[in-house]
Length: 262
Length: 269
Image (cartoon, rainbow over all chains, first blue to last red; front, side, top):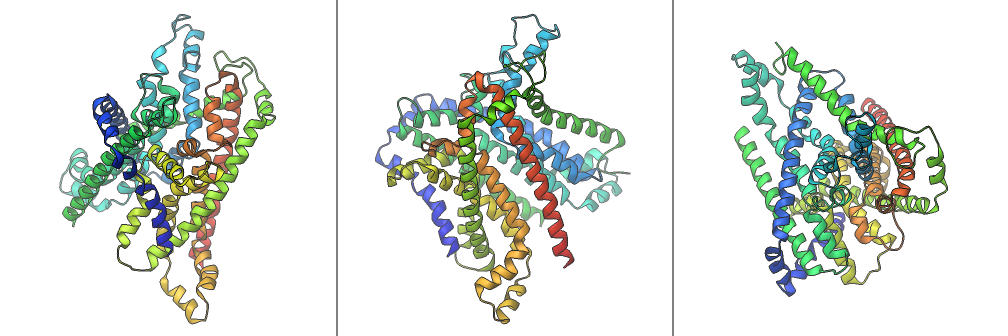
C-alpha cells in the first residue's frame, strides 16, 4: 500500500511526458532543425569536460583518504564534503563576487598593480570558463564520496598480495586498485554529468550569452516572452532519453563488472 | 612497504588535498570578509568594518517573508517526504511482492531526472489538472525531490534491524501501530532525523523546481536569485549568505554529533 502511493507519485511525473508530443511532431522537428541539437552538443561537451576534470581531481583525494591510513580520514572527508551541504546558490554567488569585472580578482590585480587600471580580465565572468569553473567547484566535494566508498571497501589484502608478487606501486594501482574502483568512478562521473548537462541556474548567473546551455533553452521555452511548451517538452524528453540510455548502459556495465569479479 | 603510496607520494597528496580544501573554502571565506566590508560593492581594497549590511537585512521585510515561506515549505515538505519515505521503506524492505524491483526503481527515478525536467513536468501536470500555483505546489515538488533521498537513507537502517524484534512484539500482543511506535521507530530514529535534515536542507535551498512551481509567494532561493541581478542589494545578500551558511554548518555538525551519540547508545543496548 505505501509503495503504491509512492509509485503513484513517481508515475505522476512520468505519465505526462508523452502528452505533448503525441499531438504533433512539430516540437521534435524543431529540436533537430533549428540549432537546438547543436546547443545540446555544446552543453554535453561542457559537462563532459567538467565531469572528467572533477573526477580526475577527486580520485587522488579519495585515494589518499581511503588508502593512506590517515587516522582522521572521516574528519577530513567531512571537511571535504561540508561545502556541498551549504547552499548551492550562495556558492554560485561567491564566485560571482570573485570573478566579476569589478570583482575580487580584478580589483585585487589592479590594487596590487599587477594589471593596469581599466584592463579587467573580462573572460572571468559571463563565459564558458566561468560556467565550467563554478560547476566543477560545486560538484567536486560530492564526487569524492562514491569513489571513497569503493576504495574503502576494497580488500587491502589484494594490494599486499600484489606487492608480494613483486608488483610495483604503479602496477598494483593499474592492475588492481583502478579496475576494482572503476564502478565508483563511473558512478561519480554520472553523478556530475546528469545534473550538469541539464543545468540552468549556474549558466544563467555566471554564463552570459557564451555560457548559455541546453537547460537555459528549456527554461526559456517555458517561461520567457513567447512560450513554446511543445518544443520545450520535446527538448526535455530528448534530455531524459539521453540520460536514460546512459544510466542503462552504466547499470549493464556494473553487472558485467560484478559477473567478472565473481 | 606501504603499497598504496610512497613517502613522497603521500607528501604530494597531502599538499594537493590542502590546496583543494583552500579552493573549496576560499570563496566562502571571501563572502564572510566582504559581509563586514563598508563599501557597497565587494572590491579591493577593503574599506573598513561595518555591521550595516547585517542590520539592513534584519529590516528587509521582503527577505524575511521569503525566509519564512522557505522555512514553511521546507518543514512541511520534509515531514511529508520522511513520512512517505518511512512507509515506502518498510513496504519495500519487509514485504515481498511481484514487481518489487520495478517499484524500487520507480521510487528512485527522480534522482536521475534533471531538476529542469522535473520542474516543467510538474508544471505541465498542474496546468493540465487546473491546479493554481501556490505554496502547496512547491511543497509537492519538493516532496518528489527529497523522497528518493529519504528512502535511500532509511532503507539500509531498516535492513539492519532484526526482523524478529517486530515478530516478538507481535507475539507479546502489540498491534502493528504499537510495534512501529515502540520498537521500529526508536531503532530507526537516527536515520529518520538524518532524512528529515536532508529533506529540509534540500528544500530550503532548492531553486530550479521552485522557480517553475512558485505562486505569488517567493521562496528564499527565488528571492536570492532575483536579488543577484540587482547590484545594490548585493552586500545585504552577502550578509544573509553568511548567516545561512553558518546556520547550516551548525545544524549539520550538531545533528552529526547527536546521531553518533544515539547510535553508540543503541549499539551498546
